[in-house]
Amino acid sequence: MNIIAPNAGKPLSLRGLSKHYATADGLVIEALKPIDLEIASGEFLVVVGPSGCGKSTLLNILAGLTPSSAGEARVGNILVQGPDIDRGMVFQDYALFPWLDVISNVEFGLERKGVPRRERRTIAMRYLEMVGLTDFAEKRPRELSGGMKQRVAIARTFATEPSIIFMDEPFGALDALTRRYLQHELLRIWQQHRKTVVFITHSVVEAIYLADRIVLMTARPGRIKSMIRIELPHPRDPISDEFRVIERQVYADLDEELAKSFRMEGRAPLPTR
Image (cartoon, rainbow, N blue to C red; front, side, top):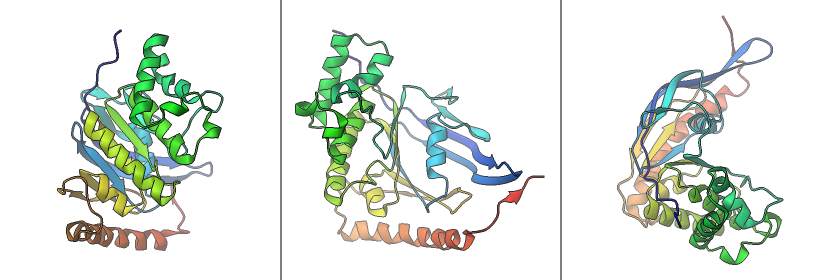
């Protein structure tokens, strides 16, 4: 049986990537200013910024779900021009198919890749075992808790062996204990497979706990304000002095942008020229 071989993480390169939207009444909303960024193979990059700063827009462009207005993104030497099964996506709302059971949800991407039924069943069970859900393989999503649904979504994403995984606030809707457990599980899986991960969160503690590097974005229009490399070894202790120093540094940058964001509320977008 030819089980899918592990796919190493690939680098991601952003050059002058920007996004604006034109409204029906002829106004322009600038979501992202030009962004230049290099993401290394196997890096766990976390993006943090105020609400509305364009974090999700950036992720959707990188995943090929939304076109940029200018600039480009490349995975290795390949230009991102649309969705690709080599780039996996984990959403906040799980995005499971309610009419399929758990194992069929995990098999979905494998079926799209043309993997034979018996082989994809073996792969799906391996990844369900990885997230501790083999006993729930025949359950429907409605029978699972929120944390279990997200574990299925993670298993489905990793099962196709993408080189890059995008995660948009994947744990944001979960209770604190489930969130902490899944953070630990995600780190374990990432350390095992070394995919390139781009992860969005509003939680500073989550960002420091997970990241190799944190990208801090400005208030809208979003651009990179600063980058912080996290040198602490895993597992990281959020109450350690070293962790708290980084936390204060991140909050110092974010507080300034949050203040700008609040001041900007209600400001009209610029008219087109």
